[in-house]
Image (cartoon, rainbow, N blue to C red; front, side, top):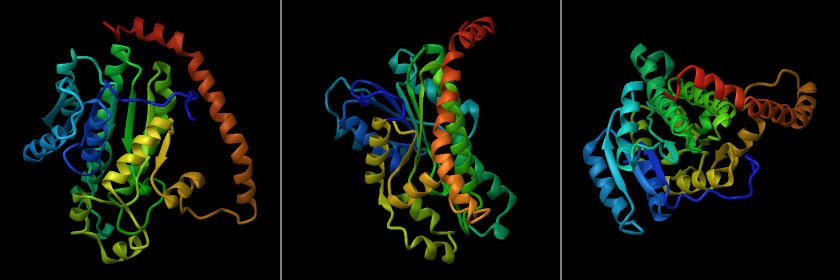
Length: 313
């Protein structure tokens, strides 16, 4: 258990916000949450897909009092992401959600030398900023409302490693890992849990779209990856959050990358690096616990700082 508690998270009766909830992982997760009695709000761009998603979610309703809502927003900017969050919170007395799953995102794999500058920049927007802006809006609202909630980001196996064809996507997923690891430390000041999911290839409409531009060599390398369905990925994500795992995986290869953390970066020294691995296995958790302890001890001082800064006004 990562967060030091034996209780497992139960979304029944809680308000859960899912971005990118009209298709793929987001929709499968939203269905799973509705089936477990949660009030679920989803946001995506395409209204027609949202309408179809709402019909599907209604089929899984557990009781008449469940609030199930869909909203159309672009999450490309901080302003739009904040507005989307405010909109889904309105039916819940404006209170922050109990959990936010940032599943929105897309990819367009190509050879780096064939990309335009706009495509490279858009890769960071679609792969990182649409989740980072949501996390920022959610964190601020949870802190102001004193909600001991959860924020869950979605990276990829390519957030641990990378290979040919993913130059506009993998950097964004590595960045999400950096954000999640930072927020996991910082947001414990407010008892907000942070998790990040590293799914492998998922067979979704997004996968079909990215194959339109994916180089053949990239597809060939991926052919060794069995992949998972969106439904299986949603279950793995949900169970990882319930178990309190900071980094959540859905297949063995990604679990190995998680354990190694170096991904496929070359070793510096074939003799020394294994020794470093063994030392890190012991030292890294000790270092992490010491940092977490210092952060928790800083809570009272930090609250005073926020009060003096007028954050809660």
